[in-house]
Length: 394
Ligand code: ADP
Image (tube, rainbow, N blue to C red; front, side, top):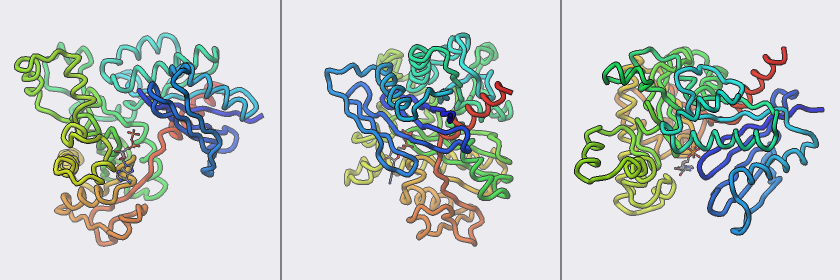
């Protein structure tokens, strides 16, 4: 009987999943998403070749808690595959300083990871609640936590240090970095496509609702734009990115905001949404004629270029840029605008290849190679979950 793994990426309002067959090179069996959780949940699941295999909308009166949605998902999957799942791998945004590798979930681990909830309020509590729900629904099933912070554990101490007094640093206040599951996948793919480039100095740009850059040297993270929390760095869908800490003092002291209000402002009301006053979604901004939408796009691009400059200094030069995630994979306009700002580096974009979202979008003469690599965080979670369960069984 085939062994099947489920990989979950559980967010505040969405649950992405992938189903993988272990004895067939981790072949993808199905993938899908439940969106608009808490409002009007909608499930869409497709087979590996893109055929719709399940679709469901929840009515307002139905129980639509995360646990009940997961219960239905697990039951639907097990009915379809005809046997029980052998393991569930989870994206967990924050693993703190102790986890450079994925680990098997235990009660002690869950207690430890809950300490990081305030550091990633958009993600960590939802990642953990999916683990709790699976444990309640399928007691005894093997669960594995795969961390977004883990890939960045290779950074030198100088890149992770924050210039605050020692006693605060000693509490664990340091730069961690996120999107590591995506960066690890991108690095693996790049290693297959262009090993020489992976061996060099690369900026990987994960540009989605959340957005960050990772400086990779020989395939390892040496610096990144996100820091202690996933608020730092680039302008994002609804997060402000890098900000003068004096602004926070101003909000507390002059505007009289409390911490909960500031948290909401920084995580949910800022970024593209805040600047445009319209939307956190890049496509909506491109479809709009509003000057504020154009300003938001301009700021997004400007900050990617500016932060790239910082990472190029960390790397001591640059050999390649890899774009990934929703915006990075699908928006020729944004890639073109970013590369135009960085053209002083000797970047030459092949505009036709760029418009086609081709794998290589720089010209042969370009001093910097520019690539597009679609990310696949669920697959990376599956690879880790499979490897860990295999090691445990040996
Ligand atoms: P998440 O961080 O939620 O996984 P995604 O990686 O799916 O986010 O990225 C979502 C973002 O990608 C949205 O801003 C969306 O508008 C943007 N996006 C997707 N397709 C395009 C496109 N064709 N052009 C511009 N932006 C796009």
